[in-house]
Length: 572
Image (cartoon, rainbow, N blue to C red; front, side, top):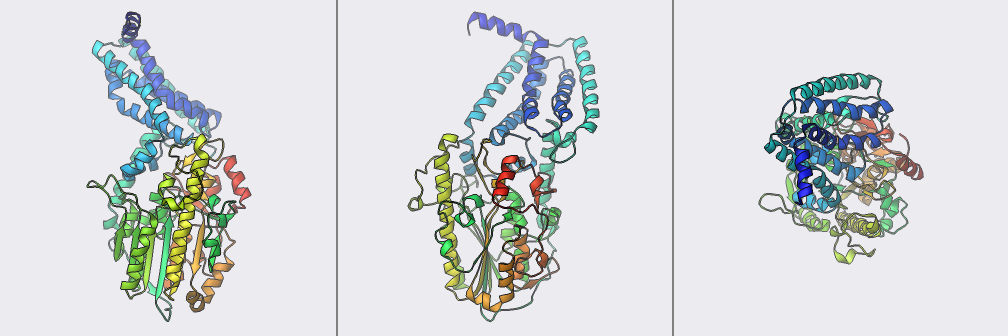
């Protein structure tokens, strides 16, 4: 280190007032960024700055050795770094409870795919916080100490600012939610609240086997077909309606399904959640965004089918991640996962969705009972170009792996190729079912959509704290065999009559039971699109804290609302 720089550094290290100002500024960076991004009233934005300032002034007054105190606060620096990465990903909002849960449920393979695209944010946080830790260590070693008088002034000013800012919360407003609370809206209070919420939710979900142990649907089959019945529920991954040609996309991404007979399309469909660990269980259970807590006491739709004599099968191309989806999969009579993992379950091997088709054919051929099958695909999960074999690389070039504006054309090409592969997969599945001459029906929808650098916000992927149009609007379709139409003509005609009505993934549980003529007190036929009693309702999404919110007020920006209008999505 040059002598002059070394001299300046030593002067800085030995100036306790200057050091504490530096530490406070470094810790305030996330709050400063939130000031410009959050949808708060002016008072709410001011609180974002002054409340954490008061907290930090008070905290840094607790010890004379400021360097030691900052070393003790390294966990806060980690949260600050995490928050800056969230800004890079989504351009807004704080670390959500779902993000903490995603850390626990994402495999190393998936994490590596994302981390490879976060290097600018990672470099930024390293440049900010590694020097802060080095300075803290140097100040601690030098025993740079605050005077008692300065500590008292900091504590008094800090406490006054905290009290003042708390009082201002009663006059502030969050334009999305209509209210303003420290635990929801002010950094860093909200991240600790969200962490606590995530831990409580995780612990509660770990108790699910015990809390649901004695649950029964008491289901009965109201009407039986004359021949074998096979019903298949296919859950896709990250499939947005905007890139399906069946939903008006200019590219031909559904060349096979577009020629398929007996499809019923629901073009005004949205998901109830933009994260897999929430959206999939909501499709497989009677729980919904409006009554999410039901999920902790009830079993999945698999149990209802089992109670009526169906043999149940769960095929998956998704990494087990200790969520409700895993619990539900274990309820099936036969469970196969084609995404093998290493010894620790951390690194997974990529397999294509079509690898599940021979397994299904095996079960159809070897089992004689009525079948209920759930297929959980990997669909269009990033990296998109890994979701299909090279002979499906229709749109070229498609090999970009870095999510940057300059690569958007390649990313879209790869994403569209993944949709064409999903088209092939679903068409193959339909042909397989059709060849059995059974009474058969198929439901398909992805868990949620995807952002792909679609506008000036440069949003990408999914699971953001506030969803976008591209994450919410999904393709949803049914296929009914000729034999099904003959056996249950009323259900088929109801599906056709309801096709232009607005729906959400809430229909999955109720419609699949109704398709199979299964009755239980948990079935609500007003949520079944194969029933004449189906009703269009105000559609809700699940917030980060598992509360329902009207999808149109879930944080959509003007760009999202414009797209919703262009696609003629009903405001219900």
